[in-house]
Length: 220
Image 1 (tube, rainbow, N blue to C red):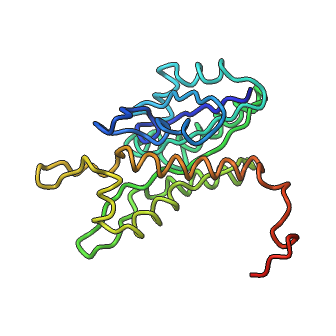
Image 2 (cartoon, one colour):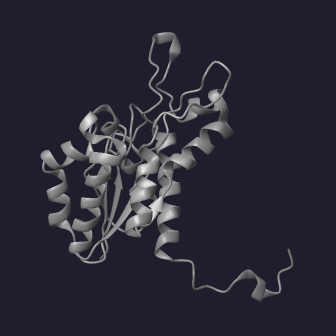
Image 3 (cartoon, rainbow, N blue to C red):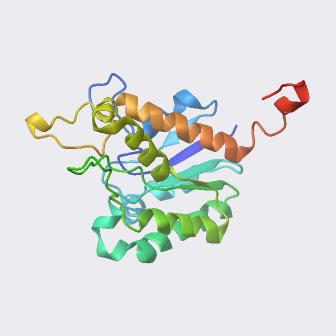
């Protein structure tokens, strides 16, 4: 049976399912897919540290042909000069794709979820600089499926507004000094996981072979 493997940082990592703390979208991803999920994402991970800690090797060793590997880094890579967007970061993503394909599995690249940071004028800031672009370029160059989580979360936060985003980051409390709007609460994680699952469904073409509604005589 196909397994979906997740590689990433804290925004993908597992967490408490009772709403008591922060949790990445990967922690609830199994709620939205039928296949087993192997989540090796961990807080603080970069594309370098994920390899150094053996998590990437463990992912590769577990792969079977036709498995999927969803790869989302960037939050922490941007803190290290050696992992600049178009240098070490892009090179690591390129190597990841090749290694997954060598095992007959199917890589999928994801851009980083946006940090929910509104400025004093109520405008959502762009916090990742060139890193999402780097992922898009690697995906285009290598013909790898891309889930643009950065675009989705920017739309999501803008649509919700600063107050609405409290649903996605319930632990953030400016009064107490907790300004963390990077790490999700349970509801936020579920919204992102649902989107990723739907995007993966489209990548896999699971709904492509049914009849189009126009064949039913339906009039728009």
